[in-house]
Image 1 (cartoon, rainbow, N blue to C red):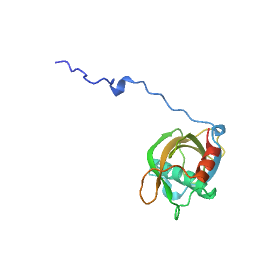
Image 2: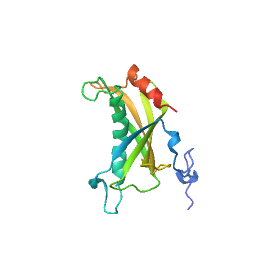
Image 3: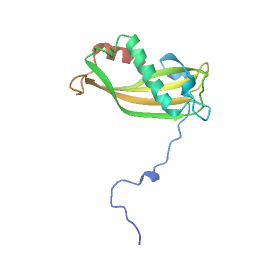
Image 4: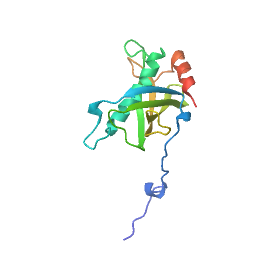
Length: 160
């Protein structure tokens, strides 16, 4: 018996995949240095994949706090992650130093897409590249709200 597809959407496997490629340093606006820790390595001798997501948060939120655009303790607006992804191109391992390049590729009324390139110190191409999307909400209600002016201003400097 032949199975028929009754939906109007093609099967997922019918769409050719685009292979991600490393990015260059020049494609990022700001860089932050992150030290690896002994505990970051896994049994295979490189940084475990979950650590990369922590570095994304550390790089973005650290930068926003330093710029006075995010108050994680008393601010009325907070960012909630609604999407994230990472592609890996080369291994990183303790005791390497990581340089995280930041850029913003989409800036909406209440949301922002951050893209982060992770580089081994001094390397020209990303060891990993990822993104995450924050939706900014009122801390108490958890309802989306417009980006505060100071935050929007800082994000504009990262925009490509």
